[in-house]
Amino acid sequence: MVAALATHSPIASSLWHEPNDLTFIDADDLTNIVHYSALSKSRPGDANVVGLDVLTGATCCNCRAAETNHHCWHAELVQAAWDGHPARILAARFNDTQLAASGKKAAHMTAWTRHRRFRVLPADALALVAARAEYRRRFPVAAEVAEVAA
Image (cartoon, rainbow, N blue to C red; front, side, top):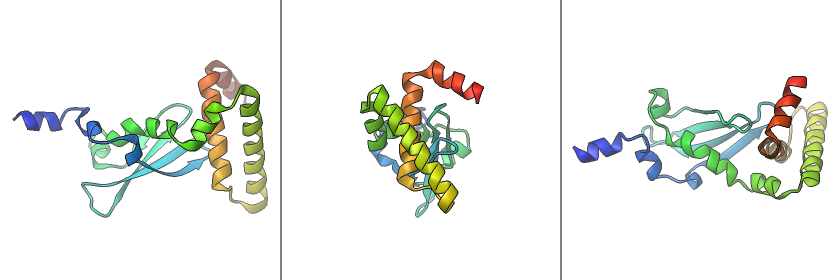
């Protein structure tokens, strides 16, 4: 009976996993959402995909637990996985001037490639999303004012 209670605890499933269990898929510069995947235990051969809005922290997962309104370890650990991503770490190490330059360059490159080739390079989209996430972390009020003004 004790083991049954432990498996239904809201933190039990996340105790068996770590952020490295999630695999980075992509970053969308239009929606500011990054996607990660993990192999499904309930559907062998399938993968669960979890999305994280890097500006708001909202998550969405397609695993069976999330579909049935139960605790989802993917959604719990996706923020930590994003915080450990090399592009996110690099953006966090920039000073304010470097962060602004990096964000402007990534925004220019995504706009240019979308206009010329109709498809953004994944590295440019990732750099832009990482710069936006770091800017929001450093200047939460300024980012909200800029969104309202736009």
